[in-house]
Image (cartoon, rainbow, N blue to C red):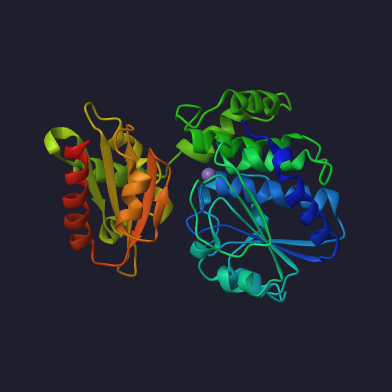
Length: 340
Ligand SMILES: [Mn+2]
């Protein structure tokens, strides 16, 4: 259960910092997901509602994936290239990073680094060491948007719960809990969702558009990736690879890999699912899901410092060709899984 009162000293610091700030930056780690987008937009809405005189900018390393463009305020999300077209200076008085540390925020990190006051809002248990000015981190929150919601109801923000704000918070809840399926789902998260639904927004649309809908190319990419799946350790590991050439074949975008690992994972008898995704610059994004016997966050961290996540869902970024990453990760994972 999220107890926002434990953050009273941090919220006080934030209040003082905001009173001295005019230009606000909001960002998140790259490859932003539904929780990250929801949290950034909700935070922007809270700030604009309470402090209409301040200038608030949401900037991510990449442009917002099409699947999230239906969200209220989606048009306000910049990438560094579109931000510079506005003629605005990349100079801010206070900067927020949500749903993960600033180390993975790509080009926005240098803007964050030179901002005098920095704020970290997250629900991951482990993150990078960084001298944030304000830290609001609670691993008991099902999603960052749950934490953002509680912050929104503090004296500092007093945000009205209207349908647009509600769907930004709701998307984070359904995204990170997998429609209230994953073990991070709490009774409080479901009660919050129920309260949000009372505002009357179209929750079917938010869930389907934000999480389930795919382009035809993306559907075919998923079909190919699933048909390439192989098992190891007597079926306890299932794994597949998604290459750049497959992306190109279907005119797909990186975000189209969303959801594929869940299908792999839901195969009978599987303990751990592994998806290796080839990024353009000879980097490999490793995604992992576990039934729980294997702590995949720990495993991801054992691969690289750029690894982490939750016990049952984690990821890592490896700097090596996809073939090498595949054999190396599979070998290590097989050892861990056969020991489990
Ligand atoms: Mn999250």
